[in-house]
Image (cartoon, rainbow, N blue to C red; front, side, top):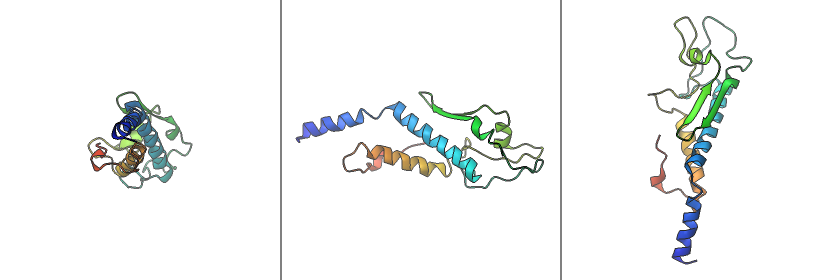
Amino acid sequence: MNDLEAMIQLGNRFGELSERGIGELFAGITDKLLQETFETRVDPYGATWPENRVVPNPFDKRSNIRNSFSTYYDGSAIIVASSHIATWYQHFGTSRGVASKPMVPMEGRGLGNWESRYQYAWENYMSQFFSNDRVPNNLYLSV
């Protein structure tokens, strides 16, 4: 294979790198991380969810909040939405005894433990497009 053919082949592989493809990949990863947060009861920053002081019952024992989430890529951002009215109160807590249980990273606090998972997925995704299965150092995911 000559240099021109190699460049064309590389260009064809980069054609598969669409914004939608990357967005959908990360929406899927976000959904998986959210589900793991509920399973482990550990927030994105590594803290175990506290029990509510007012209601000693297990949090979301019927999975109503967990099942209310939808995660998708809308063409410009990854959207995590919940249709359950209690999600806000559980995520941020209340002054009346509902303990804060962050379910997704909070604005201004970074991605926490989720960042390394996103980075790992990014590197694996990008390695598909390089023949030596190694991502160049300058293709670090910026979040």
